[in-house]
Length: 309
Picture 1: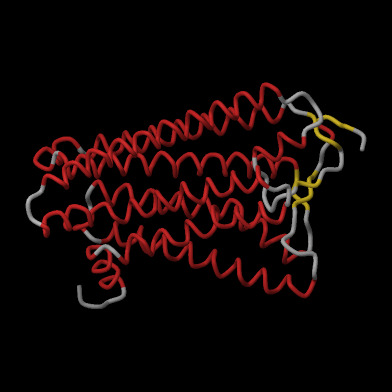
Picture 2: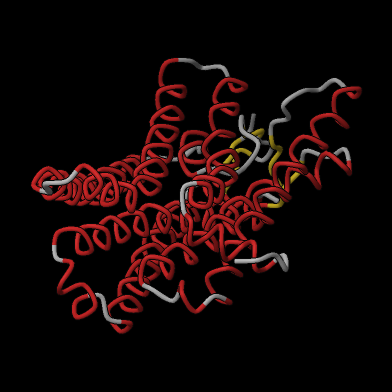
């Protein structure tokens, strides 16, 4: 394969889950169904928080932002895959690949940061309930979300610009169903030392710091809950953060699963299957986790459908 620089690359080829033509309609229907459920579920969460004045609180403000990011996160990868299945093509343009990689990196970072901000919100609500409204002002909530966007955009922009300086073979097949940063760097035919250093440094920094913040918040929350005398009070306090804790566990466990599958096996199909859990299943389950365990959200959703609150 003759190496060429990135200016000579017009398109890449993406992996399919199966080359069997008879399975393509089944795969298309499955992923289309999961995508529609993801979009509808998260849109309902957004509509519920916007339309119901009882949900105009910091917790639901962050939740609606998370739902919006999850819609964008899933759309970044699934839409192109559905188009390729429908058109019986595996191609993605070089510009489209870089754009997809940028958006994927952006929304993964946003998910990560927003979950950390939500953990801080639960920490303030449970550990400092009397000062909650004074601390979690609308201005602070807006600023926290803005900082999440800025950090994620800068990180995604840095990684994308560094990939643009790499050279790639003129004919390249990416062993994944979407353009992901790590795969693109591994397939480059120029020196990637600097890319690897920046990529892994950013990975450690952007995962370790938010995760440490989440763990610290929940260590304080557990201490505060243990200090509550009544069992009912403990249950009520824990129930306010149970949904968030479930989503955090799902997000980091599936992310860890993707990393371990890529390290433990060189099978592209195994890695792609693990990525589906991370990119599709997790955003699809988030609305159910937040709504099924939350009476306020369920009441608001019922009112949206015209039922009694």
